[in-house]
Length: 474
Ligand SMILES: Nc1ncnc2c1ncn2[C@@H]1O[C@H](COP(=O)(O)OP(=O)(O)OP(=O)(O)O)[C@@H](O)[C@H]1O
Ligand SMILES: [Mg+2]
Image (cartoon, rainbow, N blue to C red; front, side, top):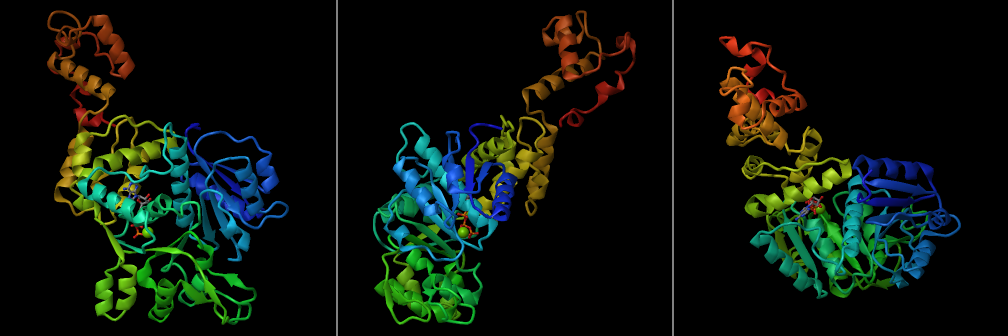
């Protein structure tokens, strides 16, 4: 395993949760080490390098929060992703100002955990880089004008308490932008709490956001702190805000205006200090026209709107993104890719990328797996809907791209032209400008069979020399 490959530490007392998280993390190629208790983690020898800690809040003995305190006291800088089972975060968390942390409430999607880990690792790698700032846009890759001006807006708005509405097609990087706003803001040491409104069942969203008292409804067996309270002094990222049901919208509006609300089943007003960042891929103005979204809420959210343009409108970002995803996947898979052929980039820039950067990322990951040598050979034929992609694909897979393949082609070509004759003034060695013995040893190394004796007298070259170059390209 590559030492530079980030490592994820998991501390959870439930062995089935631990195993599930372990196999999830391994499936994407990161290194992972699991621990059943905070003590076990503290007494372990841990390698240096980028990484993060996935930590259950509730643990027997030292709790997750105690562990966080211990790490902070020892000045161990590691981003922490807290997993909470019950939404019942003790108030002490909110008083703590101990470094980067994030909360995920069970149940969560695999992808939510992976996203959180990816970002945390990115931050920890940046911190370890020589001369690193606290946070930069390191994880947001791209060079286009559109992206640069977007990042400028992010930097400006991050410093203010303004509510931000991030809009853009699916996979454009809205979540990445939301995290950047938090990490560049004065609240960076407070929690970043994420709620995906589309992923939480309708009936549960209100209690998830605002919390409830015990007995507030059937099944409310214990008191629950909502995510707004959890995000106190931090940032709440309300993802897929277009999916908030109409009947819940007035309560959200009031919260934005007054920064206060009541838990379900309670008359006590809770005041919170939360910065809201919302995102959606839906067209909210169309939803307003369709009476699916309140216009007053829309204007409250849209104090500072940011639109992330689709990838097809900023193709200058494509080459650095491809390079970034190649670097990342090769590191995870312990592979080497040295060449990204120009024709490949050309073909990729002709695809329309409806799934934007996420689609590109998945595609490149697959390409890295499928590439047999050190040249990136993506399955370009899969990019349907693009008439020209296919013939570029054929050209690319038929052309020599590694040094070794180029050499082999060159030799085969010379052998074809000299009818398999190696030595002598009209032989391939002379033509290639090398000694006969050098050519023979090169042929052996490259697996090119030596022509039978007397081949030069044959009217036509042996079969293997007639093979087209394409069949040698892997
Ligand atoms: N500029 C970028 N540089 C590096 N990675 C990026 C960039 N933009 C997006 N990504 C990656 O692409 C994937 C999708 O990004 P993200 O989840 O932020 O998109 P989204 O706009 O929230 O999508 P959706 O609307 O589907 O939720 C993530 O894995 C993210 O890390
Ligand atoms: Mg998203």
